[in-house]
Length: 138
Ligand code: 5GP
Ligand code: ZN
Image 1 (cartoon, rainbow, N blue to C red):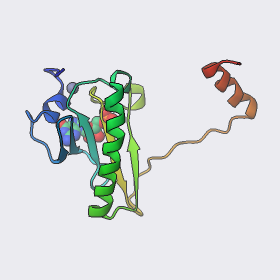
Image 2: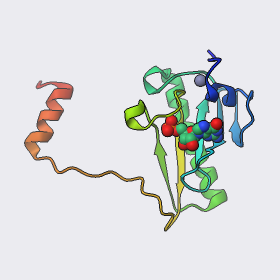
Image 3: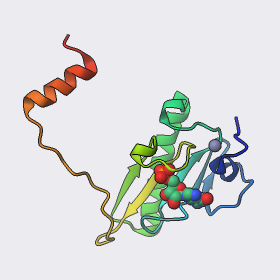
Image 4: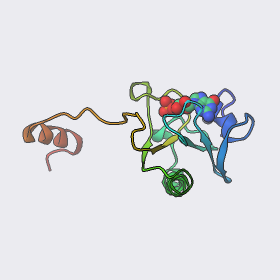
């Protein structure tokens, strides 16, 4: 399904031009317009899903295989020192475009980016409370 008012549907399906790194029947990989680092790319499925929850299972699997392919390509061509994958769901998590996309962010020594967590320090009891909230006590 294509959404008429979705910018990533239009980009993925070629109605709006983009800096494309890769394309096949199901996906387009583009350069992010506001890159975190040199080579910051987005994997866009051509079929519209708003987020991970809506993404068909087979597409989800294919996205990760394509991420690996792109990781090799970016490392070979840009000589990055590392790479982050990021995928935001919901405004609270930083999602600004409601068409599923996976960020592929090459990392370079001293690139000035800070894509890291602020780590908490829960007790074992607190971790256990979360575990049982998610999966129960059995
Ligand atoms: P989100 O915050 O939803 O995870 O990521 C959206 C990303 O899409 C941002 O990194 C933003 O820079 C990028 N972006 C937004 N609009 C466009 C566009 O029209 N073209 C391209 N290439 N990237 C876009
Ligand atoms: Zn869309």
